[in-house]
Image (cartoon, rainbow, N blue to C red; front, side, top):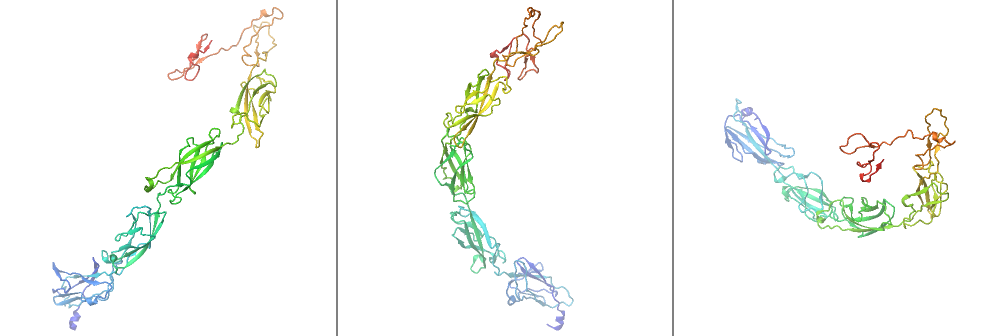
Amino acid sequence: MSRGSAAAVRLLALLICLSCGNGLHWKIYNQSGRGGTLSHPNSLVRQKREWRIPPAFVREEEDNSYRNPIAKFPAVALSITFLVSLGLDLQRDHATFSSTFISTKKNVDRTGAKLEEPIDLPVRVLDINDNPPVFSHEVFVGSIEELSETGTIVMRLNATDADEPNNLNSKIAFRIISQSPSSAFSMNKDTGEVQVAAINLDRETQSSYSLVVEGKDRDGAADGNSASCSLEIKILDVNDNLPVLESHAFEGSVEENKANVEIMRLKVFDKDEEFSDNWLANFSFVSGNEGGYFRIVTDNRTNEGILTLVKALNYEEMQSLNLGIVVTNKAEFHKSIKKSYKAQTIPIKISVIDVREGPVFPGGRKIIEASESLRISEVIGQYQAIDEDTGKAAVRIKYIKGRDPANWITINSQTGEIQLAKNLDYESAYVVNGTYTFTMLGVTTDLPTKTVTGTVVIEVKDENDNCPIIENPAQTVCSDAKFVDVTASDMDSYPNSAPFSFSVIDEPVGTAKNWRIASRNVIPLLLLLCPCGSGAKKGFAAIPDCSEEMLRKWNSEGAAPEEKAGFP
């Protein structure tokens, strides 16, 4: 080329852009104004007055200069040549290109006129398998229930490859290269899913598995890049083992008259995971505890059934009890054993131990009727303690007096006979509503001593042992007085007291005929009838005077009509 022509040479405006398929595009401006053709391994196609250029191909990480020219475009009177030098590096993670340049040469129109429209030359960089697969974790951890069916998915591994997507270089194939202790799992080559390969996974035999998995690109071909990771798979427990008691029958004993006593512990063995609901025993009564005397609960630490007496037993009523229990688990049985399970009743015999009990006063209270006319030292009754074991009078016991407010009583220490130390007095302040109350004790002579207390109530029968007394025996009255009030009282109770009969002593003779005795300030008995029940009127209705009426029963009050309880 001449020096003058070289002076006219102008650099072409060059635009580089990234298109789909990761190619390089060079836009070349031809300013000669002349047409031409493009020399390229693929044919150039003219479309709507523009050239459509097939892409040029170069391989990443290679010196592609031996391919030059990668494209040549003779345009009218000039030649445009596309060159590439050094190596291209296709980085999938950054989507960039590097170390490339283009050399172009042409003669320039002296006028600087634009000869051709810009032309795109797509340059496609061919991917090479220069990136290995990368797992998202170095160690994957998963779990699966024992006895899971074959094909059950345990986990899915995730791995990526930086090479071109949808290309053999980035297609990863998975495989298990080792697993311990056995071939319990398989792997989907395409999806990375780890699956159960054997239906006999048994936590009680093997509780965990360790696997090593390989991921290799180019779909696992021998020339593919590979990476590996580890898997730890835990086998989860299910309730596939029945609880077993240490014995097929049990016997125990408990003393009578005791409650909230632990009788025994029932040991349970279970192969399922300790302290889980699959392992914990659950007890229930099926017979013998209708009276609610017993309770059985599980000790969560030892998995023992604790049998406890919650209500006291009486040897004289029952000497032994036969219980029936069944044992299951807190969790429901697994389907592998649920259908075949049959509840087995475990018998438990409880013997009641007789305990020598202290004496008791039967009923705890004794009522004695006694007249106040009885003499001192007279026996008014006997109150003996009994032995609950035999129901007979207690032996090796002595009786003493307890509380005796009026000190009226003495007790025979051997027989329990009650004697009067003083005369009973109905009118005494210690007699309340006609009764006198004291206590007596029974003390055993055996060691350790036991004491029992009994209460005695004496119903004192009143005698007419008190005379009426004129309360105002001497009165002074005027000679013109029309009457004199005379009032009397009696310490005895009815009928040995009021109403009183009065008479005038005829001294001196003839005095009595001058006086007439009459009642004064007598208050009549007023009976009121109270209508009750639905529809009854409010208020009271008086029973007419001087008439015989009967008390009728209304609701729960009064006597029934047929009793004819009359009031004159």
